[in-house]
Image (tube, rainbow, N blue to C red):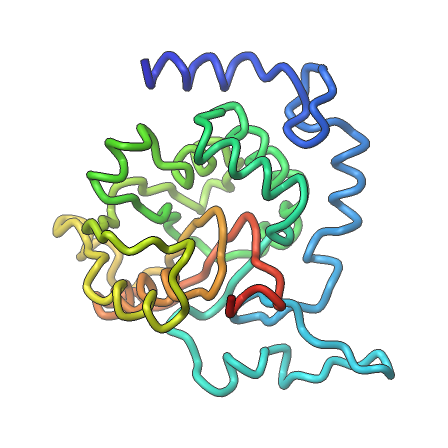
Length: 251
């Protein structure tokens, strides 16, 4: 059934994933144009964690060297983050439709948006491996699919970027990432992620991109980057479909 739903969702997108207008494309031209204007690429963001930077009344960036105060105070293990848009509005609804209502066509729609809006910044990246954030086996059984992997499958990747869908694994945790605060998340994430052994030598000394659907506090991605670098990965970037707005990050 899971494979059948994936096939139907990928072959027959019936409407725009944002405005629900019936058409052949996963996102209508009007929504795509609006998102292009609102994309985080249009705003100054922290180069490290992709959080939007504060702008002073004089129109100047208040943070240091294109990094937010938090990343300046405590540098994360990851080196770079790119995000398409804020985690709000119709895009937030689209992610929820994918994750919690099994609307697998939304994975293709979100990937198509990424392909359209992020094409320019991604063309300049060096060779790297792309690792989707994994689910635990228990969570995968419950949901039936990994939303990060489903989106990643539809990304248009240059030849020098290779998708490795199963190199990174995750142990199960009973903590709800949605309701937990930053401190609880950090404690629960300790030791949660690990490598499949036969990938360790392959990734040592390489650049790795970690792909996630939503970045809130960055704790999950920071823990993954910590594990990656402990096994010899030289550079870790994050690709995040949606970034939680600054005012909600610590909620």
